[in-house]
Image (cartoon, rainbow, N blue to C red):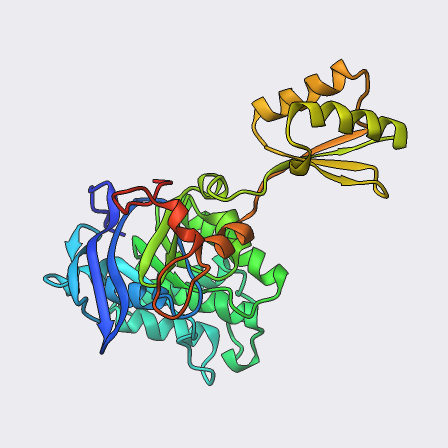
Length: 338
């Protein structure tokens, strides 16, 4: 793997693409550091796959510029292709060949030579836990095995950047987690991963940075923690030993803030108080102490990526105009979480 010293693996400015009158990408700016995992989220039809196809030189952009591995995707497509690997939603394997034969075929396409191609095929089978299955036809593989082999085929050319377009779709939880660990190991070796996914847990678990695409525009970008802070819903949940303690806490906290902000559940003996930061938590504990009561249990709940995704991709119609996603941007149109 030949590594370009430029600190950014992928950078795009004002990237656009339309199909007829339908705008799929409308001025996208991206900056993906080397050796990181970047996740692109968005509902069906939001433009995720189109973005991957442009960056991997499969289709041309309608406007803007993009550089991958330091190379312009329009002016130097061959150099870009030499530096990347792509694993799409559909596995690119021959089911009539064995796993090893598929890898050797890929090595032949890279013109690695007979000995080197077979050495690399065997090494990848071992790395992906497929050594025992390497002599079986791919048609007999499970879904998880097939996805691992598909990714192994992408690595034959030792790419420095890998585009994974919804790589775990259809996999069971165990197979998905196995693939996650493989992805983490690749990044530990210095590979950059550009991931599109609809599994929000996947982005939360893997990505260093996440961008949310909706209506052809990036409506937010940041770390998982930064994105979670963009939407309301964080709260402190207090559970009490009995009704007397619950009443005392409700009176004390009601004096600190509007009662309509606090959710009370008499059956569960709980109070739900908005806020997740240390200041909010300290205020709650101080109020309970002044009232001479305490909670039997306390937990802090923050919005998850499901909440973020639903809030940021909620639309007002078919025009691509964002609804609550507008709160994630500042006046310049740049994502507030950047």
